Length: 135
Image 1 (cartoon, one colour):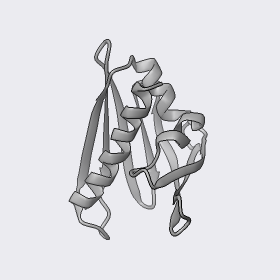
Image 2 (image 1 turned 60 degrees about the horizontal axis):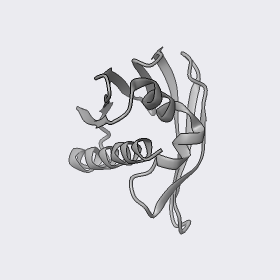
Image 3 (image 1 turned 180 degrees about the vertical axis):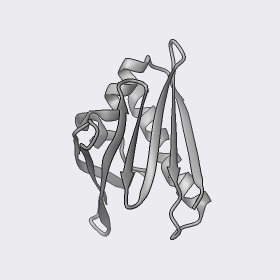
């Protein structure tokens, strides 16, 4: 199982980007890959051993799933790592002054092609960028 990397540069300072990425009030507004999906609920206990939970579902109710992860490392405003289903994901926040580069590196799963997984995670990150820059 390989590692997949997606990234985006957001036109906002690192404090805002961090807040919009970890706060459930914001997560529910960007944490989906397509406009016909939604994230109706999210919880985030951001500490080592704490859990992150998000409900992701099609707006028409045809499909949905709960994503749940446990934090392994948290360095505020710099990076965090969480584990989910035997896989791991690390998100880093690089301070570029007026901009912030968010890089997400995660373990691929075996069910879907890696390119498909990369596209899905990239679309969610693009949605985050669009939401954060417009608020």
